[in-house]
Length: 219
Image 1 (cartoon, rainbow, N blue to C red):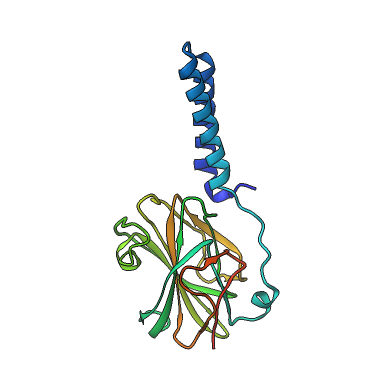
Image 2 (image 1 turned 180 degrees about the horizontal axis):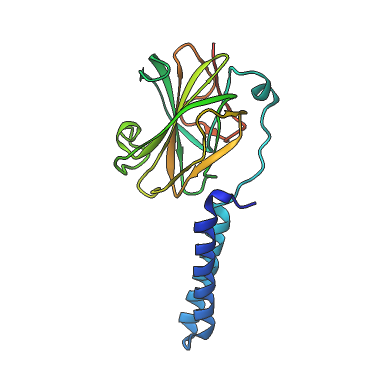
């Protein structure tokens, strides 16, 4: 299944792929013909791969327990640190950072049951997403969620390749853990900030699956 958040880019890539194949078929030189056809097929394959949206099995405990925080995106845990979060958590928080390569599924999911209390866009730089300065300096959306167990802040950050963020998390609306709300296109990063008392269940270097892997439990 192709995510609706990427229809514009997906169909543009497919159109470009078809043009390359058509030009290849019409080319006079055999080498040019083969190169264009192979390139066209490669572009189409990339479009289907990057904008895929596989079904996910949301853990039952995450749907019934507000304390469970799921990974909001596929990728690799690159950082787990303590930091200050003055806006919603209002104190020391644990930040868990997930790096998404261009090969990962880029659909983003709500990490826990709760209500969105703010959703703000912040312009910024396009540092490589593995650079930890990206958390503060890169272009990003910052989203706050509250539920019966506490508060969570999560960020969609652009990277060197990712130059467009799609965010449809609406302020005042309640969501269930694992619900889709947007995507980041062509490589990026997500930061999740939870109170320092949370029980973290992942480690740096671990691969996580959006909507399935439990990151931590609020206390």
